[in-house]
Image 1 (tube, rainbow, N blue to C red):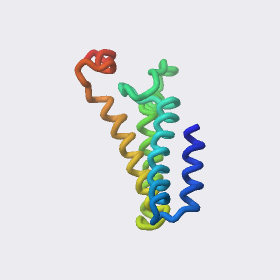
Image 2: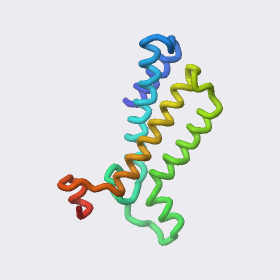
Image 3: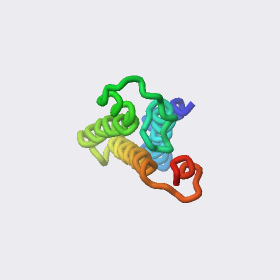
Length: 136
């Protein structure tokens, strides 16, 4: 469903005037809903050790340290690699152009999601459900 919303927003933005109210709305909404899509899919399929935002910790499948590290941090690694791709795309686009603004907003979304994942690994709020699980 979320992918359908993102696709619809891209289509609407493509045919709109980015200088108008609706075009501006669609451009911002693409980045916002892309962040939602990222959060839903990445946290469902990837894992980040000690992050309350990540899916349940999988059982170790082998003793190989490299594979165990990659598995334990797959969410952060995915966000860093795909985020770097968005940064490269943004660096090669016109930041004032129609799609350059959207890509810049997507870079911001990816940075926010990565920040949330990393913060949930270290920050504990007294009395919260996540803190109680982590011994806080």
